[in-house]
Amino acid sequence: MPTDSGPAQAAAELVGVTKRFGPVVANDGIDLAIARGEIHAVVGENGAGKSTLMSILYGMHRPDAGHVLRNGSRIRLRSPADAITHGLGMVHQRFRLFPELTVAENVVIGAEPARRGALDLAAARLEVERLGELYGLRADPLAEVGRLPVGVRQRVEILKALYRRAEVLILDEPTAVLTPGEAARLFDVLRTVTETGVSVVLVTHKLTEVLSASDRVTVLRHGRVTGSFVTAETTADELVVAMIGRSLGTSQAPSRTSSRASAEPYALEVRNLTVRDRDGVLRLSGVSFGVRPGEIVGLAGVAGSGQRELADTVTGLRPPGPGDSGEVLLSGEPVRRGREPGVAYVPEDRHGRGTAPAMSLAENLAMGDHRSPQLRGRIGLSGRAVRDRAKSLVERFSIRAASVGDPISTLSGGNAQKAVLARELSRRTPVIVVEEPTQGVDVGAQEQIHALLLEARDRGQAVLLQSSELAELRALADRVLVMYEGRVVAEIPGDEAGDERLGAAMTGAES
Image 1 (cartoon, one colour):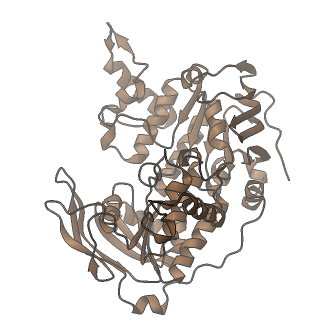
Image 2 (spheres, rainbow, N blue to C red):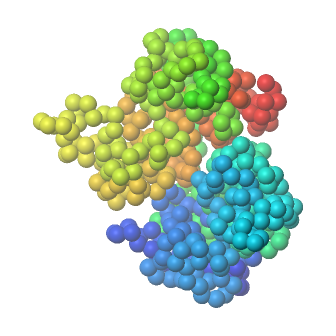
Image 3 (cartoon, helix red, strand yellow):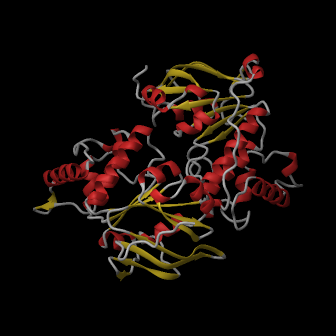
C-alpha cells in the first residue's frame, strides 16, 4: 500500500495521540502531519475517531497521551480559544452563526474592532470586504445572515476563522448541506485559500471529493491510522480497503419501476398541498404526486425549498393550519394528526428529531414500539425484551456501540444515523419517508443502507427519499421530483437524472 511520510516540518502535527472514553479507545497512538498550503483529507468509518482527533486539534478535548505541534513547537490546547490563539480554526458541520446579525457582525463577534470603546462597524465591514477579495469569499458585509443561502453562510464561517488569522483550517463535512454547484465553488475557494499558505484539513465521507480536491489523505479505522496517501497516487478502491478492510461489493444497479409498481394504486398520495408557516409565509404551493408500493421516489432541491414542511405533513407531525389546503392520503385514507403509524420516518436531524440523546440506545430503538406486545411486561415495558430487541438490531444493522444500555449520545453521528434507520426500517410500514439517509455515513455503511432501502422497495413498501446526494438519487430512485420555492418544478426518470439537468431544476432554471 503506497504511503506518504508527510512534510519535513508540518504546519500542524499530532504525535502519538491517544484518547479514551471509559473503555472505548477513540484514538490509539495517532500520528498526523499537515503541510503548509495543502488540503489534507481525513477519512474513515463512522466511529473511526475522526471527530475526536479534530476535537483534540481544536482544543475541545485533551489527549490522554501524545501532543500537538505547531510549526515544529509543542503547544498546549485547553480550549478552542487556545487553538485560535495558535492559528487553528474550525468550521463545524452545524454552523455557529447568529441569523439576526449581519455578515460583518458575525465575522468579528468576540474579536470586534473598536473605536472609542464601541464596535467600529465600518472597520468590520472593510475587513470583511478585504478578506473576501483576498480569499475569493465575497459576501455582502451588511446582509442579514439568516436570509442568506446555505453556501454563503458557510463562507461567513470560513471568514470568521480567517479573520482570527487561522493558518490551519479544519472543515467538518463541509458539503453536507451544499448543492453540487455550491460544493464546486467551495473547493475553488479552498484552493485559493491554500495558495496563500493556509492549510486545510478536510473531514469528509465523500471519496469523490477526496480524490478531486485533496493533496494528501490520512485514513483512520478503529482509532488507528491505516494509511497515508498522496492523493494523485491512489485510487478510490485503495482508500475503501484502508477504511473498511475490504473492497465494496459490485452490486447491480437497481431495476427501475416494476410493472407491479406501475399498476398498483398509490400507497402515498399528495393532492394539491398548500402549506403556510406560522407567519403566513407560503412554504408549499399546489404540490401533487404519488408513490406506489414497490417504488422509490426521490426528492431533490436546495435547502429550504419546502422539503421539511412536506415531510412533516406527510408523516402527520404537522397539523393543518390557517391557509393550508389539499390533502395527504395513505392507502387512500387521510393522514391523521400526530405521528402516523403507517409511515416510518427517518429525519435529517437525527439528534434533535430522530433520537432522545439522554436515553439509552435500547430505549431509542424501542421508541414508537412501546405498545408492541413483544416489548410489554406485566407492568410497562419489559427491560429484557427491549434489550434483546436492541441487541438484535445492533447486530443486523452493524451499529457500533459499547453497550445498548449506554446513552445514544455516546455513539458517533453515523452510528446514531444507523440506529434511527434500524428502528424505522424494522417496522415494515406501507410507507417510508427518509431524509438524507447517508449524510455523515462512511462508504461501507452507505452500501448497507442503500441495500436496505432497495430491500424495502422490493418488499412492496413505498419509499419517499429526500437527499442532497444526487448520485444517491440516481442510484436508488425510480423517479426524481425536484422542488423549488415550495413547488414541484420537474419530474425526471431516475436514469435520466444527470447533475446538469437536476442542478438547473433545483435553481429554478427549468421552472
